[in-house]
Length: 493
Figure 1 (cartoon, helix red, strand yellow):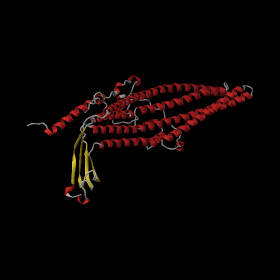
Figure 2 (cartoon, rainbow, N blue to C red):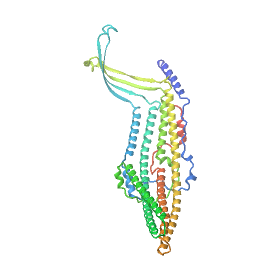
Figure 3 (tube, rainbow, N blue to C red):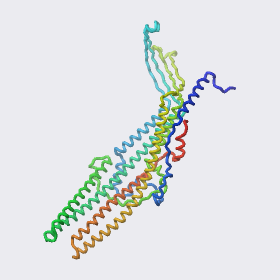
Figure 4 (cartoon, rainbow, N blue to C red):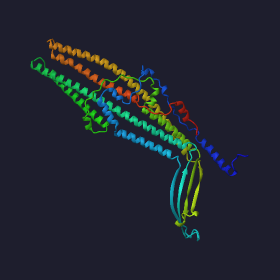
């Protein structure tokens, strides 16, 4: 028994086969160039130094600073701000776009009601065709479906889903950014309060110097130069105190804005009571596990996945498309005849189409998809490198600042001992009040340095928690970079 197709189908099948071969050949020379970096290929063991078995930060990482007011502020912000509303709206937009892509590959069924009429002039056709008006009323159901033979519809849906998942991750990244920005601004507020304390103490010291200078000039023990120097010191200390107050006001305004509130909300923020920054700890699984914790890295990886499916969708367009359509209904020239048995109308069948000459549209579209994939890969690679750099910078800064704090604390203790010694000598009649005031100046300077270093250390702790992903965990695409790199260069399906 022969298995060859009927004679009447041989020519169309041969034509379709030749067109198929021609279509496959038209993708020649087009493929993406980007290669995904493997996280384990980024060596960082020496830069990160000794690491413990500590895990990644908790989602409420800011509670380690021990300030209940900071906890309340971040909880208030995460309950809803304009920046989070915008991020959530982008998520809904991406999900809707994915729904549109999925719907495009499903069958459609619609109802149609149509009336049309025509009158052919007798100058074109003699009666009975010409000169009479003929109207037709049509009622029917129309069915359309394009089978996803080459996977193009599914690839477009997967590409849109990848974008939606990236948007969802970026919405979480917006929450991490918001909480870390509030924490950093809160630290700046704490530093400004400490700077105001030091400036106030320095202003009191300068005022005492001025009073002492005036007494010495009046007693003939000194000249006007000492008074002028003391007056300059008083004005300088007052300026520092005013600058610190301006920093307090600015920090309060910034926090209020981050909360999505007006400036009056900032006036209710009390002085921070931040404890010391926690010791820096980095999990031993860095950098390999960054892919599942860093929102920017995960989002970039989903965009790579989306672009990879975009290439599949562009390649599928080179193949023939099959469209199935059918129309079932009734049609008649008179309404009274519309539902008679003779008015039944049926039309339908498959249609195969394939562009042969398109002016380079398909090749350029595929080249665009390849370039989008390369861009997504480059963005992912840069995100991965940048994430590891941020972890290393924050860790090294924490360790360095801990050492600087220890050295400055020792210097401050020495300055305090010198001031206490000058005070004891003055009380014993062996020194002057001028010696006491002069010994107080380096003590205040070291206290100002300590306030700045403590703020930097707290900032480094915030940066480290943020660099490690802020306790977030995400479902990321396959991390097998070799397989992804091979698949991206796969031939047309």
